[in-house]
Image (cartoon, rainbow, N blue to C red):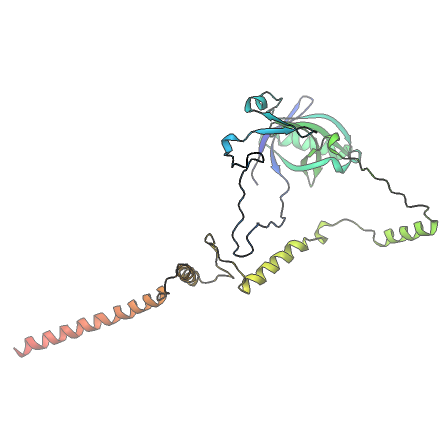
Amino acid sequence: MRAIWKGAVSFGLVSVPVKLYSATESHDVSFRQVHAKDGGRIKYQRVCSIDGEEVPYADIAKGYETEDGEMVILSDDDMAELPSTSSREISVEKFVPSGQIDPMLFEKSYYLEPEKTGAKPYALLRQALLDADRMAVVTVALRQRTSVAVLRVRDDVIVLQTMMWPDEIRTPDFSVEAGEVKDSEVKMAEMLVETLAGDFDPAEFEDDYAGAVEALVKTKIEGGEVKRTPTATKSSGEVVDLLAALQKSVAAAKEARGEPATEAPAKKAAAKKTSAKKKPTTKKAAAKKTSAKKKSA
C-alpha cells in the first residue's frame, strides 16, 4: 500500500506521527458505452446548452445553481478566498462510547500506521481505546477540507473513518403503518430470528454478480464473439504461445487493410534454416570437385 497522507494524531500533549492509507478498494464491475454495431467507444463532447458550441477546457468555470435555476459563476479567485486548511494534524476532540455513533454517518475508512518514533504512543492510544471501549472523535484536513472523523481499533490497527456532516443525512419522508400486530405473529417472527441467528462472517458472502459477468465475458471470448476495433491490443482467448499470438495479430491487421495474407514468419524461418543447412553441403561438393581437377593435372 502507498501512503496518501502524513501527519500526526494529537491528544492533550501527546503527538503520534502517522501515515494514512486507504483501507478499502472497489471491485465493482465497470462497463464502457460502445456502439453495438462495431464495438467503438462512445465519445462525449463538452457542449454548451445555450449556443450548442463545443467548449474548450480553458473556458470552463465552476457554477453554482440556485434553487430557481439561475447560475452563479465562481472564478479561480473566488475559490481561492474560500476557507481551506492544509493542517497535518488529526486533533482528538473527545472520546465517546463505541456504540453511540450511528453507522450511517461513516463515509470512508483509512488505516493509520505509526512512524518509527511514534510506535509507543500509538500503542498506548490503541490500548486506551480498547480498554475504555470508546472511539475518538477527531477533526482532520483531507483534500484541503476539514472533516469530522473517528478513530477506532480494528485488528490491532487504528482506523480513521471520515463522517458525513449531520445535514447530509436525509430524513425519510414516509411513515409505516402496519396496523395491529398480534402476539402470535410477534412470537413467530422471534422464532424466525432465533432460527437464523449467528455471528457475522464476511467470508461467507461473495460478489456473485462480478463472477457471473466474468464467466459470461469468458464464454463470449471463447465463442469468438469479440468486436475487433482499431484500438484493440489483445487477442481473443487465452494466449499460451506468444509467437502464435503475434502471427495472428499480423494476419488480422493485414486482413483489415485488405492485404493478402503472407507466409507465416515461422514457416519462413524454417525455410531459411533448411536452406542454410543445404548450402554448406553444396560448398563442400564444389571444393571436392576442384581438388579432383588439381590432382588429375
